[in-house]
Image (cartoon, rainbow, N blue to C red; front, top):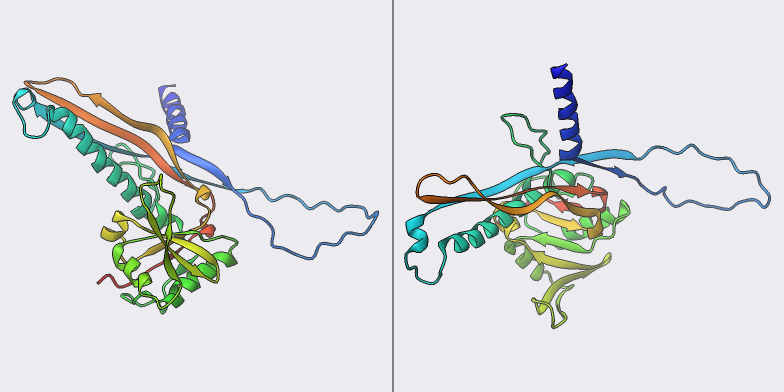
Amino acid sequence: MFSLLKVFLLLIALSITNVEWMKDALAAPAANAQIEGNQWTATAVVPPVRTGNYCQILGKAFSITETEEVTDKAGRASEVSYQKALKLKELANDIEYALIVNSSSVTGATSTARQLKGLTGWITTTTVSGTGTENQPLTQTLLDDCLQAIWKEGGKPSNAIMGSFQKRKIDNFSVNTRNINAEQKKLISTVSVYEGSHGTITLRLHHIMQAEAAGKIFVLGDLGLWKKAWLRPLRWKQLPYTGFAEFWAVEAELTLEARNEAGAGVITELTTS
């Protein structure tokens, strides 16, 4: 009886930590002319594809001695408050890393952490790598080929994220790049865009792409197709007190929903220097 209860509770946990959604697709455009008064013939509906992604737990912890907290410090009144702000920034970077770099979803076990699948793992339908050889320079043809492939799948490319090296390569294209004025209320006053046969693509620098995925460019379409799904939002908690020190930890649990990865693409195997 105990073993059956344990299995039941495990199934409940999986249903929570494995976020699932339905993925559907529109039929390809075709000639559609109906005869007046004709009797309809219904076509059986094909059930949508059910897919999912596991939630990943991310966290940071630190300890501060009571002496450190009460002594005078240069530039800050509280070491605990300062470390909290610092760890939040570090955790935000780790979350961005997971959402972009993680290549697979991991179920997890008693000795294995669950892991979400990021952009690297999700975007598989449209992968452009030119000749397929490593360390090839980014060209306007490669970028246009990726945009065209996304359009072929029904996507509407609108954003591209990359590191600074690839951004400079696009800036050096002979045509089709410019800066536009943004609204004054926004933090950034100019945004680089690429204008090609498939519309205007906003070029966005990303620090994680610079460090961990410098040889790639992700081209995204409708950003509504991607969603950060939070199981547990960021939350600080004070750990049990031991000795003359305070122990703090911040933790979050989330995953990435990819509603339809075919609406995005990736250019790979690019030179990085």
